[in-house]
Length: 168
Image 1 (cartoon, rainbow, N blue to C red):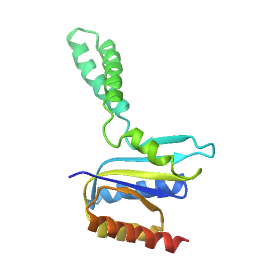
Image 2 (cartoon, helix red, strand yellow; image 1 turned 90 degrees about the horizontal axis):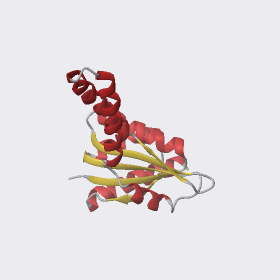
Image 3 (tube, helix red, strand yellow; image 1 turned 135 degrees about the horizontal axis):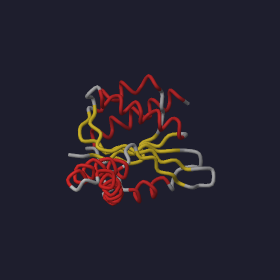
């Protein structure tokens, strides 16, 4: 089952550092992240979404590869690559999987200017292990949204609050 977790942070650099640590924990096998994004609220209340992966870029790369291979058949590999990259980029942009952008913007609208939030779509997580690995960094934060079961959400909320109190 995939769970959605959103944690608010005091600023963009803290949210990015927390996301980077989560991605490091994924490489260690402690969490499986399907999508990760950071949203920041500028001083003018403008909301920016920072995706961890660009579907358009991934689509362009795949399209260029397939376009080049098909282009070889017609003795025009560079033309095939260009057409394939363009088609792949369009397909990738249209295939926005992961955390819904509208949901992120709506939730971010409740944040203070200058603050940020990290959004995670998680397939597998051991909350206690992940939070114990995150604790030394004192990211702080506050749980904004979670689809975890009640027990896991309470453990996560308690761990985040403990970090927040240590940072205050």
